[in-house]
Length: 323
Image (cartoon, rainbow, N blue to C red):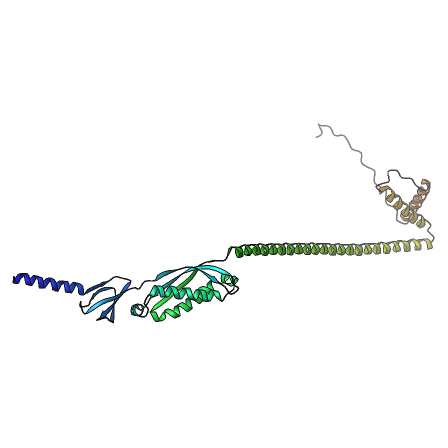
C-alpha cells in the first residue's frame, strides 16, 4: 500500500514537472501569464514555469508574414472606378504588445491597410493611380507602419498587385495610346524628311561653291595666260617693227607667214574639217615662205663660214687570212 502511494506521488511529481516545462519553437514567442496577468515572454528553447501558477497566454509568430488584401473597387479623384488588390508584409517585433494591445492582429492590419488604400488612391486621378504605383506603395507603407507601431508590429512592405480600370476606359486608353504613337511616328517622319532636305540643300550649296571656285580659278588662269600671250605678241611685234625700221622687209613676210601658218593649222585641227579649202593662192604662201628663207640666209651669211668636212676614208675589205 505504501509502495503504491509512493509511486502515485512520484507520478504526480513527474507530471507536474512535465507540465511546467515549456518548449518554444524557433520563430515563435509565448507570453507567460501569472494568475491571468502578463509577466514575461518565453523565447525559443527550454523554459520552465511552475504549472498552476504560470500558464502560456498567446503563441506569437515572430517571422515575417503576409496578408492578402482582397480585391475591392475604389473611386479615384476623377470619378473613375477601378478594382484593386494587393499584399502587405509585416513582422511582429514585440510579442507582448501584439498579444495584448490589439484583439485580432491580422484582421486589424487587413482593415487598416484596406482603409488607407482607399484613402490614398481616392486622392489621385486615374492616370496617377496607373503610373504612380511606387508612390502609392510608399504612402501606404508609411501610414500603416506608423499606425501599427503601437501593436509591436513592423510593416515591411505594401504592394499593390493589380489595378483594373473599367472596360470602356481600357478601350479609350488603347485608342489614346494608338493615336499618341501615330503622332510620334508622324513627327519622327517629318523630322527625318526635314533633315534629309537640309542635307541635300547643304550638298547642293557646297557643290555650287566648289564649282564657282573652279570657274574663278580657271578664269584667273585664262586671264594670266592671255596676259602672257599678249606680252609675247607685243614683244614679237616690237622686234618686227624694229626690223622694219632697219629696212628688213623679210621681217614683214616672216610675221605674215607665221600668222598664216597658225590659221591653216587651226583649220587642219578642227574636228569638223574633213576638207580644207584655202582662201588664198598657195603661191602666196610659198612667196611668204621664201621671205623666211631669205631671212635665214642673211642670218647665216653674217656668221663665219664653217670649215669643210674632211673626206671620208675609204674602207678596205679585210680577208679571213689577214685576221
